[in-house]
Length: 190
Image (tube, rainbow, N blue to C red; front, top):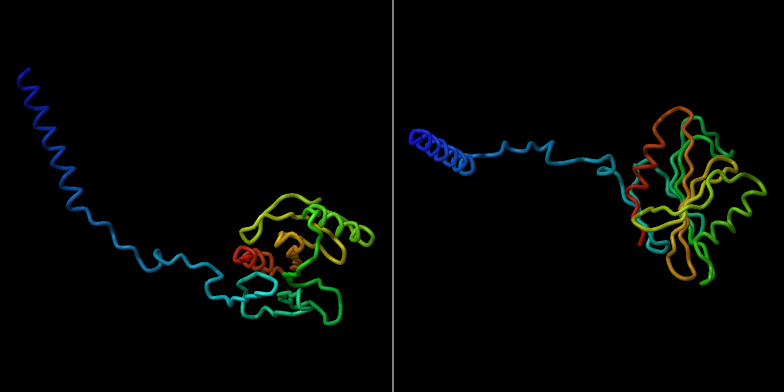
């Protein structure tokens, strides 16, 4: 029995000594530059900031920023099969505009009013549902007129809504869906 206790205490002291040595002598392997910098696709992109409409978004250099009105702008990237002067069928368009509403209207009311006009010339693919974009709560719906449009409505004030519309068609598989997804993931709404 004495030998068992002695062996126990020897093993105990060795275990404590081993833990002490590991804690005092362990050096983690250095993190390589590659591991340290988790580069994302948007890191080298340009940033577009529109204080009037209230958003900021990163985009590839070749994206064209088009101002339609003081309260409406779109970022577009056209694909190789797109013809000038026709409906948009090859590329991406990320549109932003402010829309007025009454203080009594909810975002769902605004969406339903927009969809009422759309069903006269197109179809509703996804009815308005709660969602998020740019770090803000939103109402999301999908319509099809001259293409499929994903629309997010974000309340900016009691009387103003930010509408974010996304159109993507990629017949030559360039990667427009991934580009617009990265753009919307970089979106900051103020």
